[in-house]
Image 1 (tube, rainbow, N blue to C red):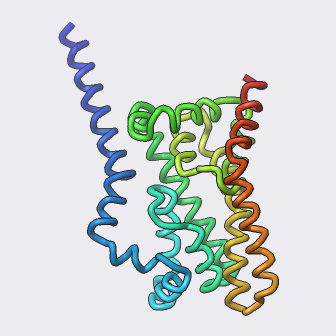
Image 2 (image 1 turned 135 degrees about the horizontal axis):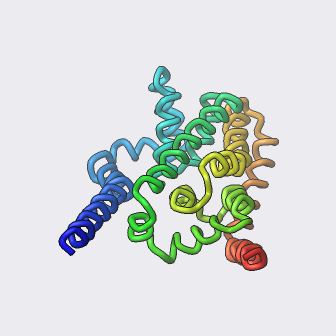
Image 3 (image 1 turned 90 degrees about the vertical axis):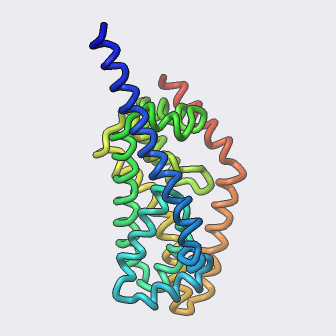
Length: 239
């Protein structure tokens, strides 16, 4: 009996520690940056500010950009798309795409394994059953690969917790990782291309791509519930 009580106490302590660590990462870091490094955030409020900052720190610009991409995925405090515009301007399309994939890949891997390490209960408690429980269930279905790809591909669908959901689902990292990256690439490429065209003063194709991107984003926002319902129908048919 005493052993059972001890095991329960240890389990409770471990759960509290796991939850505290996850809260520190997902909530603590953004709060710390917001209150103590507002000057840092203020440098990333516009395309001009970001471009100037990257050019000012030319020797470290690649590391800064990749680091911001990682942070954006883990804690979602910095606007990733504006940063990608700037990367297309500063690095050019192909270099920017490589750095974006590296940053997105590292951010995805870190958030996936944070969830995997801390476990189901900690992630569900902090992020909420309503927000992540249903998603985990979908990622445990036979259509998980299609669902992940659509979630990352379609603009306007919230994807900030997908990596965490995948980490506590049955989905293996070696399958989740490439699908999530492939789904991200079209939006990345569009943002980087706009930045690159702006740098080279190719304004007409830039405007065309920007208009198409805005239309797709707006459609994603307007029809995100219908798209989610389609995913639900997919899921219910194969469940």
